[in-house]
Length: 272
Image (tube, rainbow, N blue to C red; front, side):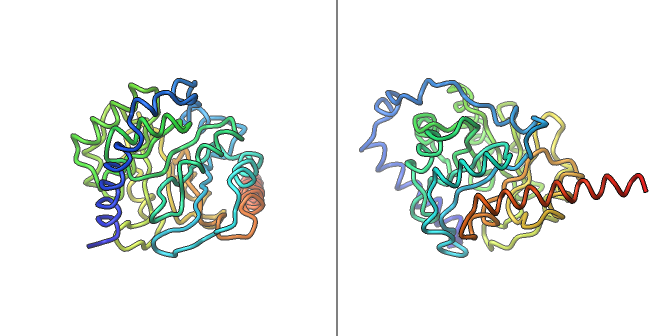
């Protein structure tokens, strides 16, 4: 059993247990449930932002613990102060060391769009995302059938949430539908966990202009960022590059400064 199948299998059991412990009607009583949504699409288009969706991730199945001591409030505030367009917060506990509490904390300290990064397979998780303060949900095309993607995306839109559909291959574009807001190309093969931004550069031509485009994973240096931006991506989900350091917020700020410096250098070279 590959890791993606294992995670999905575990998630089905987890959701079943949560439904018994915390019924949907209880989640709907959350103060966040009817709060206004902060649009990720709009923030990705703002000229005063970088396009970076900075991720808070404690660990991963491929590398185990990445940063066990980072504090959500300090890191996420620092990310946004650095000029990021939004946040991504891992809420899967078993494989990524996250929790709903992490996202709720990020929400409490930041007015910005927040993506709930998890393996969504059930409408219950979308209600849960709304109840903890998320603005955008992730639907992974690789673990869902076409009909499931559409049904879950439609349900998310009914709650006011924006939807990011993640693809890994050309075949998965057939699962796009009218309820999707953003298409993300994951440069990480979720079965082998190998990473290459070539996946984004090859698949961007498949993304219709109706959707915002983001590249996810493996963006570890300013040169890769610039290459992806020039290729036409609107956003860039970056997590491990920052989280593997002792000060993720500082690493993010230095990354942004390096991008600006490189962009200025490229712009200046055009006039030489």
